[in-house]
Length: 334
Image (cartoon, rainbow, N blue to C red; front, side, top):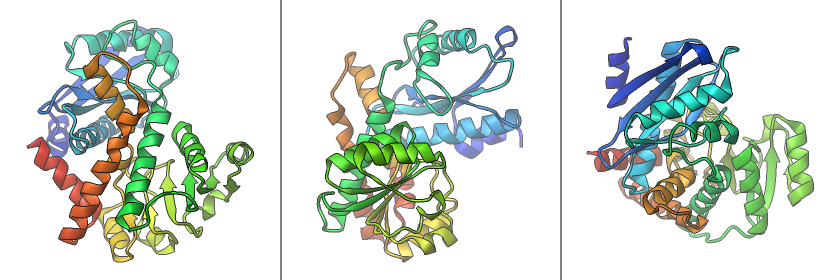
């Protein structure tokens, strides 16, 4: 499949390839949509098997950013930057060069943090462009959005509040760890799992969480499961082992296939689509960029409204929430 076929597959507007051989920079800037406003999307720095793999990832993530922005009713579109991580990548200079490439887009693309990229990288990007959120606490903003999604899901079930609820958090990176803290503060019982044993033990010491083996987190008895690690974890067979009422977390692409979404619906498990639940950092970044000043984290709570709208419509139409969320996003993008 050639590049134009991939753009058509994801409904993207454009792709820019950025190369700076002296600094080992090979990057792709993918813009999915600017119909509702400038494209917003973070920088992902990973090792890829090749250019096609990097391009596919960029386009898929850019599409999800458009969906996030539309579902949150933001005047913004979606994009994504991927940087191909190699031994030749001179991060200090490469990210400055990437910033200059972003600046050449004339304000139509605004960027921030994503997997594999550091705050130091963003500070270097900021040397080349002002179109970057280099100091936004992405973990806290995303975690607060997940909290709003969890609250809305339980309200949808007629069980308001998180106090006394048991929530299993899978993955204790910047978002999962912060989410676990917030849940503990809300007086929920928190179960945690991470492939890094020390991360789980540290959370247990800090907030009184209970540690679960990584292999058992998907089948542990709880009120809600919050996937905050890798995507693709919810296969139809994995759904059969779930013992929860709600699934809502920050991980991208949690459903391995549409069949998994239907399996959740068949079991009566309320699923908050990932691009609804994890939109917190995008919301705060867009609104601050538009306001030209820092805003409080309470602006992220609108994730709860988006969640309720999706779940109410899914119930009314008898369709899986992921399918409904995508349809709402496409309606708004159109």
